Image 1 (cartoon, helix red, strand yellow):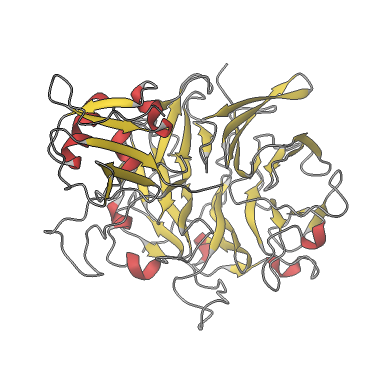
Image 2: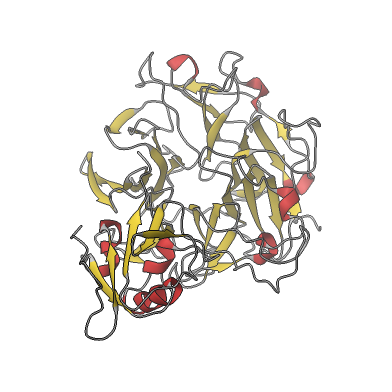
Amino acid sequence: MSSPSKGGAADSAGKVSVQVSSILHEYTGGESQLWAKGGTVQALLADLERRHKGLRFRIIDEQDCIRPHIKIYVDGRQIGALKATVGSQAEVHILQALSGG
Amino acid sequence: MAKKKATRRSTAKPKASGRGTLWIGTAKGGFALEPSGSSWRLRGPFCLGAKTNDLRLDPRDGKTLLMSSTGGHLGPTIYRSLDKGKSWTEAKKPPRFAKLSPKSPRGKAARASRGQSVQINFWLQPGHHSEAGVWYCGTSPQGLFRSTDAGQTWSAVNGFNHNPMWTKWVSVGQDGTPDGPVLHSIEIDPRDARHMTVSCSSGGTFESCDRGRTWTPINRGIESNFLPDSDVEYGQDPHCMHMHPADPDRWYQQNHCGIYRLDRAEGERWSRIGTKMPKGVGDIGFPIVLHPTDPDTAWVFPMDGTTIWPRTSPAGKPALFVTRNGGRSWSKQNKGFPKSHAYWTVLRQALDSDSNPGRTGLYFGTTSGEIWGSQDSGASWKQLAAHLPRIYSLRVGYPKR
């Protein structure tokens, strides 16, 4: 995974930085660094889904719960629900939890 | 519910003969083992690293492959291939339960979502031969889903999933397989696309005569020694159940508590036919597979279901057992297998037969990643492949040339 950028990562279009790990590269064309619009995690994921079809359902279930082995961080703080707010300069990470064998 | 009309006739018309391709689902992806001259050629892996509980070729077109996939960290999905597994495309809308809404009717008996989320797409089943593109999927937790576009999009069969009896019929929580409770053994009557059965581990077998809108438990006679009352309407643990393709009124079941047969046209009570198995082997196992045309012939692969349930070949000596008289007697088939210290077993989707009625091909995959095959109805066996991941499923299919 590439290193997250520092100190506020909005791009020129007002999108925030979303770093995803390799488990989602199937959906992102191999990219770890994504950009998305939205004031909440829900909105960010909806924006990502428009460009990366199928990504959302692999990490969020049909009841809008974050899947057990997925962790989402906003500015380094793990969030537990999709209604969590995302500031305009936020950095978001979508990572996998340790699991399996 | 009206009984199905008694018909003891052969409806099975094998469409393909010779050795088919073995489509294999493992703990780490899918594989294909193809006939190659007098030998076999292994292809894959497909989706390396993804748990693949089922991988099947559509027998109606010989082209559409569906593969269930659970990505470890990621949620479950289904992949499709139209080029024999060379490339795969994810379903646009994989199976998913309805979202629980604040406006949804509440209570255990409500005909509404109970807020489940699909954890595993466990069992894939092509639909009736007259319904091209129709597939079914059984999930964990126990849900039934239907696709009418060859697996691209899936809809819930809410006659089952939202049935007011659902929470009573099926186990919720920790019961079931080590990976959770599952819906499996989706059987479609070849005479009637509306007539179907599903089985739940645990929960029992359920029958529908209206394409899944209404369901009735059909489990009487099956022991459930893990319940205080051993003869109950539902709550049993079928491991694998099949309607016989040549006589859909004859049903066979490998259950947690033995091997059973039901002649559906004659009633609704199962008879235990595993009592004639050798006492030192017992009649516990996961899979059962049926002869393509003879309703009296079936094979099982017993496992050790004593004491703490090792779930290995009894005494470390793997063997199939075949009945050729509907379960009145059983014969051991182990020529070619290790004679001792082989502590693997065969899971419920991992034993299959081909379409040859004379010298039927039988194939299975083991929990230790081996593929074994027989070209003479189980009389002798050869190892066809080894060193694969734990095998969940093995299905014979005939790709269109």
